[in-house]
Structures are given as C-alpha cells and as structure tokens.
Image (cartoon, rainbow, N blue to C red; front, side, top):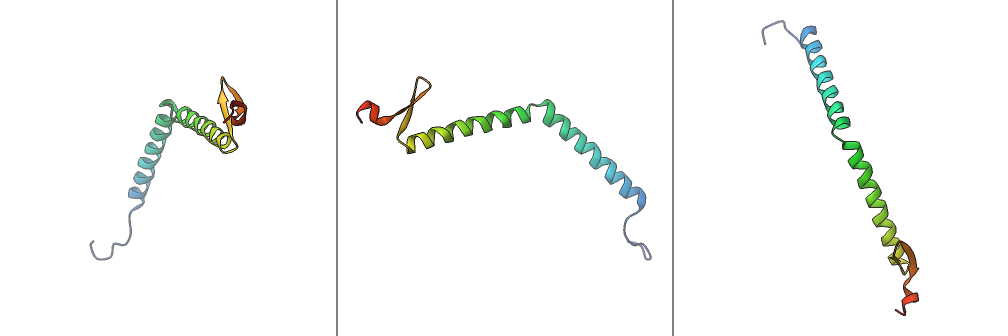
Amino acid sequence: MMKGQKGITLVALVITIIVMLILVGVSIAVAINGGLFDTATKATNDTNAALQQERNLADGKVTVNNQVRNISDYGV
C-alpha cells in the first residue's frame, strides 16, 4: 500500500456486493430449478418412515401387507 492509503475504496466495496448478489441469485435459482427441495422432502419422508418401522420393531411389531401386527401373532 502506498503511504496515506487506508482501507478499500467505495468502488471496490460496491463491486464486491454486486458480485455476491449475483452469486446468491444464481445459487437460489439452481436450488429451486434443480429439485433440491423436492429431493430433501423425499429424503425426510423416507427417514421418518424408516424411524417409524424401527420404533415398531422395538415395540415388537412388524409390517405385513401395509398392516402393523404384533410379532406374538406369529407364534414368535
């Protein structure tokens, strides 16, 4: 830096903010159009279903033909 210069100029700050806004806009467009939110929703639903099956197994229940039954019903 030359003597007497401190900090950045207003022009450099404005250019940095504009570049950041462009990057944010592109990122949001890619996230929405790329199906990121749909994929996340499906993953959440799949995880919740797996957790429910795990709870059922811990409670001694199994799912047969989309019906929850007690393991004791099968003589186990």
